[in-house]
Length: 243
Ligand code: ZN
Image 1 (tube, helix red, strand yellow):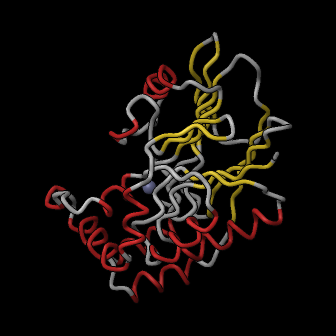
Image 2 (cartoon, helix red, strand yellow):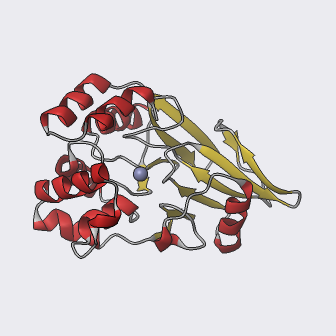
């Protein structure tokens, strides 16, 4: 086992997921890990759950996975667009799909790395990590040198060494001994860093390298599915903007 793909924030975007999985095959990926949010925002939640479930890899609980699976949740606290997507997504899923979502863990260690959707310090609260202070809180709870997460949809590297915590723009790099890394793998299905291309990460567990992948996909096709489903138009527009 060497090349491990880490996918996150797929968000029911089948067009983006198919392109990412084709790239994984080309890159010689042997194993998969998923930081969660398989559903929400886009129009193919059932298809994406089936694909990820069939891969059989560890998948973490994302906030959208949680909202869709938790029928007791009060959607009145959500903005109307978000509540509409949660309701629509529930209607597309089988009981088996919903049970699969409900059983996802918040955090897990696999292949020597820790996976979490948001942060290792309080994984069930789905806090956002955008700065060094938030990353430092994560590092206090991160037991392994390497941890992957998502949630912000912006790929990023946070590094902790004796010198402190540093936020480093996404770039390919080799892990250094004695340091900890908390790596945001970006989003397959709804990137928000201004670049609309699908994003994922390859970790080579032998060479100890991390590679960020960016892939163009058929955004117009994904937008057409959103509009055909009657989901809010803003969700289609933002795919092209990468926000
Ligand atoms: Zn997300």
